[in-house]
Image (tube, rainbow, N blue to C red; front, side, top):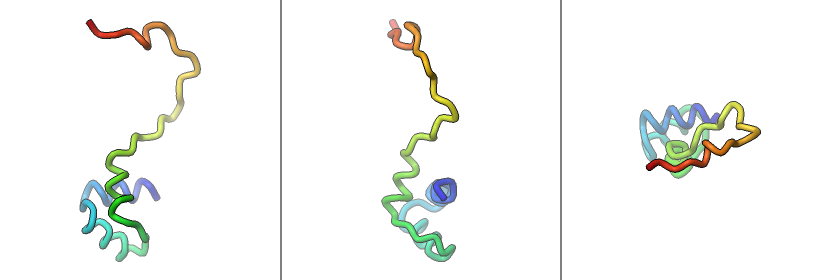
Length: 59
């Protein structure tokens, strides 16, 4: 469902995307669609151990 919302949001935007989802029988709101544009992708696998280099700063 989230992949469909993200694709619609990227293509149509907020209110037009909401109308498109309504015609596809997938109820949603414009805020949810726009929120999908800013939502980070879920990582497939998160790291178990962080090393010192993971926290280094750029000079």
